[in-house]
Length: 73
Image (tube, rainbow, N blue to C red):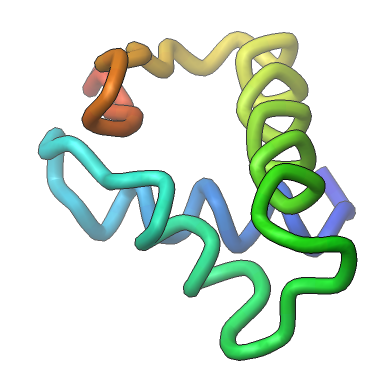
């Protein structure tokens, strides 16, 4: 995995130790203060990063309206 966004998303999910990470927290981890294209555009990139991590075999649970959780193996 060499894509910086996926690395940042995975880092934040792992730091939560199985807890739910809100989309706002993921956006802050990935983009900091800059969000080119607005929040909807940024949200789409977060969802894409999550899906790509899932394709690598990681189990990431979606908690609708709350965020995402990395399931421990």
